[in-house]
Image (spheres, helix red, strand yellow):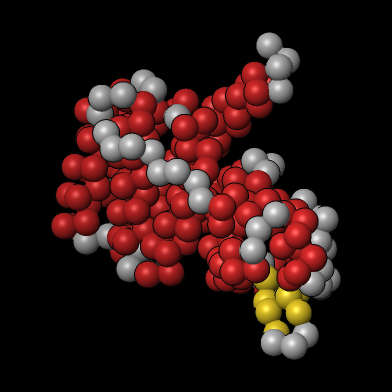
Length: 238
């Protein structure tokens, strides 16, 4: 294993500013204080501040207009799903809303896959779901499970479903370790997911949608319970 990367001053400043924006200290539409004032407040030079601004602008949180200032963007109105990993990192409360979308989109993907999957895609799905059961450890099973869902999205023949699936998985990244519960028992993880694949293989759209809904609801309950326990431990309730 290589050494862990060290945070730079820009990393720390970016995180501080991001938390101030997402936490409401700098609301949408407002202008940040002048650069010189912010640089003095954080004890950094203006070059460092500009680098942090650039990252936050790239993330969709800020926009800078020469001669006017740096304004906080209304990311809920103008932003896209690519903001989700950052938002989850700021507040795990976003996870419940992500799961709601995950359930509806996942069921629809399974239904579409049942209607459109080719023989080669069915063979791939069966191979991938078998890998879930064969995985060693919860993290490996979790990653194997993700590949099944990516393959289901590909089997729809609709690339937007593939991108949506990728987006939802990326949103989990900040808290993925806390969502490993459904995959600790690889055999049980396989048994929950296998009916989805078999319904798709049979071309039964209604059964695929129902199986996906059952799978997504079951894993959601486990993951939300694990997140709640993790939060209680973190807050010192245990």
